[in-house]
Amino acid sequence: MKMKKNLIYLLTLVVFSVSSTAVAYGQTSRTTEGPSRQAKIEDAKMIKDRTLLVVLTDNPDFDQKINYVVHKYWTFSRNIVFVASDDLKKTLNEKETKYAVLLINRVLVTETNKWGQPVFRNKFIRFSIKLGEKLNKRRAVYYQDVAYSDEDRQSKKVKLFKRDKAEHPFDLDDKEILFALDQIQNHLIARFEGKQRLTIAWEPLANSGKLATKTLLIARKDMDKKLTEQDIRDTYPYPFKIVDQKEIEQAYLSRNKDDAFVELAPFGYANGIMSQYVVNCENGQLLSVGAEDNGLGYKNYVSKGHLRAYVRHANLGKKGITKMISKSDAKY
Image (tube, rainbow, N blue to C red; front, side, top):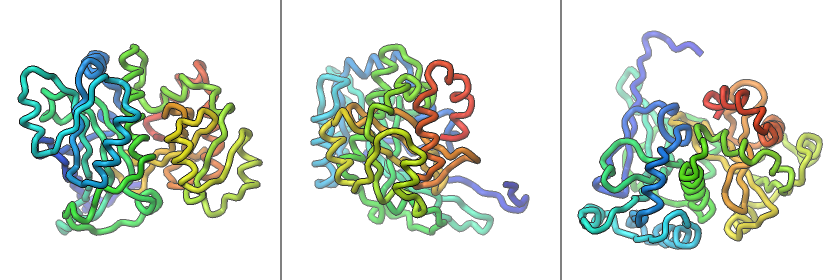
């Protein structure tokens, strides 16, 4: 789509951090940062040998969830310490210990139009991991973004918003927290083992064929309104169940080895664009990714086109690397 020449948009990214020392992210290309950029092997090795320092958000209810999920599911590094954001700088100055730091940030994105008015573009929560001595560097070793709510996953309307972080509280369930944690942890494990993870397309390639052995749990709230159970049977050849969100959460948190589920997560800074991940409940690894057959396929619900994509991308194997990776940055 061509933009009118007289409209000049300036993209401003405002990050409300849980830490007073965390640096705001500037304008960034999604091809050079985030889930489309793999961590350095040496960084993954250093993180594994360090104590994980988890910075709390000063929201007691949310921090309780973070404490539970990290304690129970983080296995990449041996020791875990939780710290209030006000005490982060003091803790990092302790010379006898080197830390890897897990940060949880609220990210609000505005776009300024030619009249200088801030227009809502996107908002999400970012989980990122950094080396303690590089906390003030812009780039994280790796990060994963999570949508604030179902409304944000499914809305494509342009909105105005105030730059008041009180209007954007931390409010994720355990499933969303674990999803973010798993994506970071699985990426670090792969890089520690020397495996390539250039884009999110690489993990499904490594898991080629496994989706057929799982029951795919599809949340009712994430389905296209026109999609029926019969449509799924006609399109998707593997076992599936249409369920409530709570059943997906229970299967995921219990590490059910028989199930997988669809997760919608923000892609880049544009409003209304979500990646569709097919996640293995057993370990959080990606079994497939979804975009519709035609166009970019950025839709915040599960459609017949996405179901076909799940099957296609779950069975590419080694022969599919060239085909899939060449298009993955454009689609996901």
